[in-house]
Length: 130
Image (cartoon, rainbow, N blue to C red; front, top):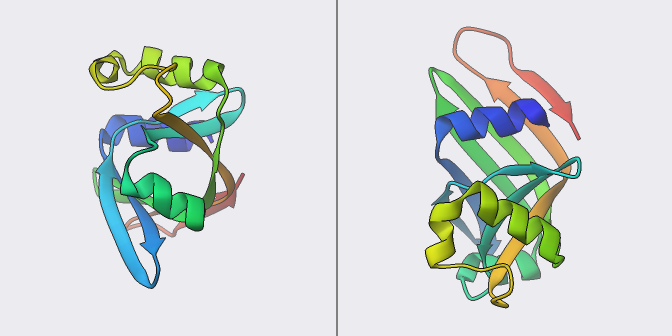
């Protein structure tokens, strides 16, 4: 889990895929946080991604850097507690102009049943789960 978090932070951007009906949806994300032994992402409840995840929590994250790519298939589970929201926004203070842990819009979700694969063209894939 820590390796995934560090890879994504180092990459700076990852892509999150969700499903809307039978249509895949992919968008760039930049937030990742290891909090209370869970890996979290952040979005806004008013966004389509939040609605898509409420209908189907299965998602996939993908990041790439230095010839290595990471794929994480998982379920994203909302954690509506104040503590992880505050921890996320403290880790990404630039988001405080748009979000606040008390605003009713800030949403943090943790990865559950994650299947992780690190791949490249030069080495065998490395896979594990958490």
